[in-house]
Image (cartoon, rainbow, N blue to C red):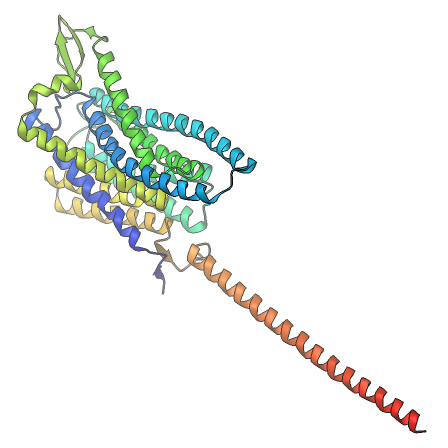
Length: 435
């Protein structure tokens, strides 16, 4: 067989929820923008809103962390009751206290990183050019996040790149460039629209800022492994500090005011006060929220909570590279939905879908969920490495068995010769006496 499956488990089915929840959550966010803030291309809410919502969703993990903490403390107490109070245990507790300080420091830094990544991503929308086309974001973002995550895992998590993984990365990048070229040609020649340099640079900045989030996932995995911290505790702290940073950021926005500009911005994130304007805060949006809006917001928060939990479960249980598989599915869904909403032609949607499937298959090959068995692409996969190790162990057992049998045969032969020699010796003594 040219194609086979790698190691699969039931746990790998859980992250399939990521693209499903991601799609539903974005539909709700677009509904929120369309129904209550004008339309999804002209947003009138605060740039702090999405960051505040994701921080609240993370903070729900505090409940799970309290349960986890009580269970852990109960287990530790049982272990300590069995141990003796000696100097070794005292030194062990001192090391734990030192590690605790480092844990808190790293948790604050990761929370700071996470908060400002979401915030800067939303603030960048203020500067979105008029000719920016959202569909160009996905064909470039999928391989960029895929390659960045793989490279950062190589640097910090000591993951190795083998031939099949390098090949899948190259194929993914080539397919992405082809898809990007097809979309640009279609926009320019079919839709008769120009793509300015400003729009292209904005696209690169947009992708660059979000790519930092994937670097965060690698650091989070490193933190979980080195500091022996659960992903639940990490998410709880991301939520706590995210809310604190959100409130601080909203408070500071009252103090930062800019000169009034007569021409309003396309994305009206500003509020005019006394001839000057400032960034709208989350408190400025409360007046626009009725009961149905609040229900949508609660739905978004709960979906974000489940999505983030599954994301970090995938990262902590498997790897950040495995997460890119499900992330690419999310991007495929989002791009196809965007093309359908904008009434693009059937042949374009079909072409895009086929190329995106090729990119998705590349991620499966990289993570050895699919194994290609030709041109030596399967030699360094876990399945083949484990098979060779088992064969080597079996060969060693056989060699040891043959050696033991040979030694036993030699021992038996020596014993037999010894008995004959002893018997001959006794016979000679007997014959000597008889003489």
